[in-house]
Image: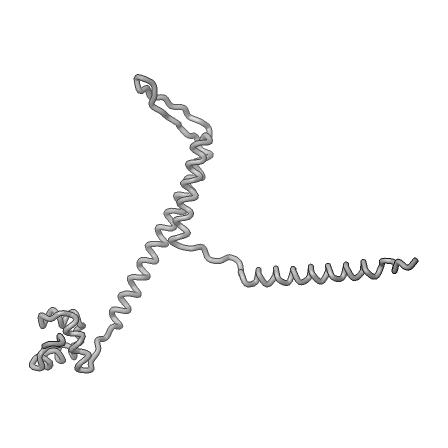
Length: 176
């Protein structure tokens, strides 16, 4: 057909498959039609497809992905903790050098400054990535803090006005 619907001779088969509870894609496979043809035919015949299973599957998939992100965030937090712990553990620093490419190493009681910087940077990066995967919950009430600061500002303003008024009352009138 010109508008991409199936012929009327196939409506009965389509409606039977729909009544059996087959979804759009299953009907497409059974009847050898494209998804757009099946969708337009369904609209033309005034039927719709039950999408509750799709919605449930999507919800489950999103929950699975959230759990995986949470697990990755935990691993990244562990990497950050391990990096910071390694600062205070014995650290072996090595190098290859010289014309004969000689190997040399030295063990320090704690990580030297350059290694400390690298470990702190690794911890910071891991923490940052962890927080992007699973943002920290707000531990404080931002609106409450703003309200408290506003109240404090009002109290300080009132106190300042009172002090100015007291100063003005205690000054001599200055007549000569």
